[in-house]
Length: 268
Image: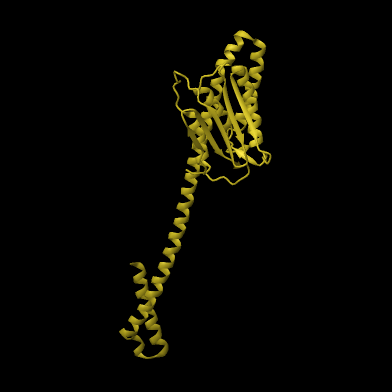
């Protein structure tokens, strides 16, 4: 309303100024006033439209930035929750073994505790990491397998195979993924030295494949599925998917190999 009023006043002023300049009453006629008013109205409309476009574009950019920031914060919060799940899940599963060793073999218990502290230090070091190098993860997994040897002796046999063109430094994986997968095998299967559990881990530049023969416990433990679901969700946040294949005899998980230094995009 105010812009229309200003347009009218401006048109009236320019009509009066034209009449004064040219000294001809013709320039002060109503037709001339309407012509000038129409022209100024179009100029005013164009400027208002331009202003509105600039304003809405700025608002759109601001909202898009806020939405992107919120999405990233949500994804980071979810990832932090997943990492927080992982550490206690690993730690408490080893307390029973340590407690039993303390009662039977103090020296073995001390060594077990040292290995456990070394592994837990790795978990704490990478609690905020999205990816670690495959080299670091394999070293961590080897330390974890040392603990499993103490717990199960020769009842659990893990065979690790590498391809010759594997670049462990530049390939990446979410931290503790391999440990969680092996722990998943231990949790759901029954095995002894007479009937050992054999786990095959095949590592190639494109993927990591872990496979085991199913020897399910006759009375399965209550499970909330933290381990496998944790891995699935962490890969989803990185824009990738894991493959789980199960038959009556075999259980297999295939992880896509990631680049350690790739630009990471969270998927909320």
